[in-house]
Amino acid sequence: MELYFLIILPIFTSLLLYLLPGKVTTWLGSFLYLAVFGVTVHLFYRVRFGGEIVTTGGSPDFLGISLYCDLTASVFLMLVGFLFLCVFLYTNLPVRVNKLYSFLFTVLEGLIMLIFLSRDLFNIYVAIEVSAICCGVLIMFKRESRSIYDGLIYLLTNITGMLFFLLGIGLVYRQCGVLDFDGLAAAAAYRTPQELLLAYVFLMTGVCMKCALFPMHFWLPAAHGTPGAPTAVSAILSGLYIKSGVYLFIRLQAVFSPVFDMDVFFFWAGVVTALAGIVMAICQCDIKLILAYHTISQVGLIIAGLSTSNPVSRFGAMLHIINHALFKSLLFLAAGLLITAYGTRNVYKIRGVMKSMPAAGMAVLAGILGITGAPFFNGSISKYMLSKTDNSVVDFCFLIINFGTILSFVKFGNMLFGEKKELTYTRNFFSTFVLALLSLLCLATGLFAGPFLSLFFQMDFSVGLSGYLVKSLIWAGSFLLAVLFYKKVLSKIKRLKSGIDFSLDMNHIALCTGAGFLLILGAGFLSLLPG
Picture 1 (cartoon, rainbow, N blue to C red):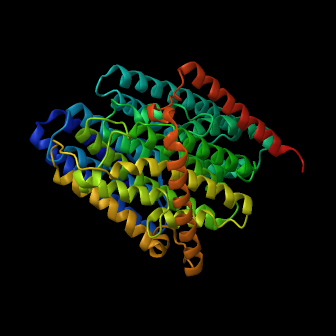
Picture 2 (picture 1 turned 180 degrees about the vertical axis):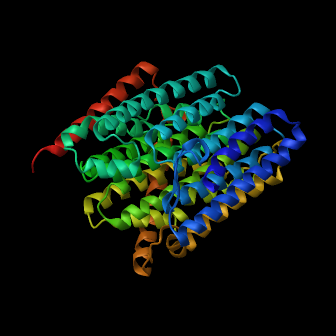
Picture 3 (picture 1 turned 120 degrees about the vertical axis):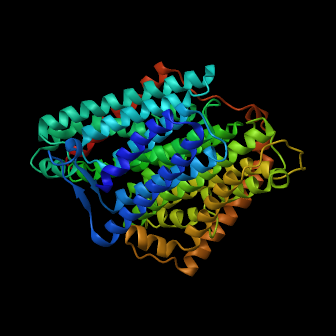
């Protein structure tokens, strides 16, 4: 029943948060998020040391919905519980927020739990559709004209992507007669690739839209970086919710990889996505848009890593999913404090953070060191593993992607330095505590990566001293080169200081979605050709 608890408790408690008085809801919310996180830790322990947990559907069980929790799902669930707890502390204590906001935010946690616990494609489709509505309303929460427009774009693009996914569900059910992942894997062995091709392409188009893979990525910055969206919403969307698409990618590729060899296509799609995200991030001056475009870049890097043939690189991509959730949530939450204190989102107008807001400055620094793969921080280990492919072309691609990330965050990190400014802002112990906790985790998961990998992924991997030293020297060289290139080239380009708008309207987003569908269809067709 613990599996049902993770879904039902947030959804039903959200009604109480909406109906009960404010003081009660603060304590109730605290209990809820602590309880959910505690259950996820308990589930992880049971699965890690006792095996997969299955709650079979049927009349004796609640709603007849089957839920499954293996090691991968348990890690994702624990990440969901932890980050929602952190964001609640950051947002709700000691200040109480709007009841509707609390209701939607809490419902969202239960729906994300359902995505990770269900192996039925239709249940996942329903959970994603309802969660997209919650996210859309949260994006539009401040009811500003820009945020309403961005929220509608988000809703329309997600509905479009899920329509592709729903068509794929219908086609795969017609061919296989089942919608469960395990059943699909077994049934696919008795179907020809030609019979499954169209269903696979429709499903993966919806998943790639959810992952914001190039060229279906233009919707994400508007949703994650819109001025009207609360900082906590941006942190959950970029740090956590985008991982639901990556999770589906992992599950569906596991089902269909014996039928369609698409690793090469998705590797290059990930690389192009990562590079596109970096270029667009460099061209921004808005602090939240920079982080939003880097979400595209990092997800592209993860997809590329998952599509390599080396198991170490694949585990590195899995580890990077967790690392990205930590440092990207940290960066967004710290950015929210900076925007409030400085009254601007322009990265060129925020200076002296380390002197004016040392706690936020240290958090930003920890996030930058994590995302760029600096020695001793979490990104260094996952990126080190990603580069263990024994393929010079692949390694070079990952090196270029990381250099672009460092270059972008050299510009971002300039906020930390400069003269101290007298700022008027409310200091919040809980916000500072959350930033400090996430910062320490970014460091701890880098220093103790070996035990972390063994515990969470049952993988024995140790970083050789010579190899890690070479990786550290490469990072230092890339950093120095990035600083030089920024000072001599990028800082001289006046156009970049006003930012370049890459947003598209719905018509062009639809065209990009169609192009993505055709690319996946073409790659799927080519995979069927002999030789």
